[in-house]
Image (cartoon, rainbow, N blue to C red):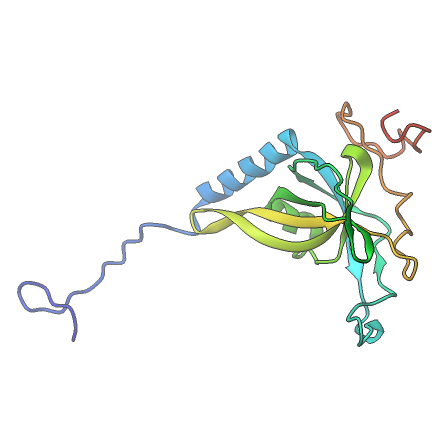
Length: 196
C-alpha cells in the first residue's frame, strides 16, 4: 500500500539530497588528511609479494617460491612501535608481535596503484623492523567515503625454504632528522645499526 498525503494523493520523494558524494569539499578533507599523515607520520616501505598459483603447496597451502618486489614503494602512515615478545610455544620461539599502520586510503591507492596485497613485506624505519601484511581494512569514514586505511601487520619471519631474506639489505635508509628522503645519502648501516 503506498504512502499517501493528507489529501489522498500519492506521496512523492523530492529530489533533494542531504549528501552529495560528488561534493569537492570531501576531496579537500581527504587531501588535508593525507597531508597531516605525511607531516605527522613516518614513511614506511611496502614491497609487494608475487606468488604463482602453480607453486602453491597443496599440503601446507603456501608457496615456497614467493618473491617480493626489489624496489619498495614509499607510503606514509602512523603506528606505535611494539616491544618484541618472542613467545615460547610447542614448536619453539614464535613472534606474536602485531602493529597497525594507519594511512590515508586515497594516498595509498594512488602510490601503489591498487589495494595492498596481503603477504607483502613492510619495513618500518624506526628500529628497521620488517612486517608481513596480514589484512587491510577501511577504518574511518567521512561523508560516506573511506578516509583511513589500516594495514594490520605481523612481524616478518624469514624462512630457510624460500627467498625471504633477499632484498632485506637493500632497503632504503631513513633518518628522523631528514627533511627530504635521499637513499644515496646513507649508503649503509654502521656497526651500531641504522641510527649510529
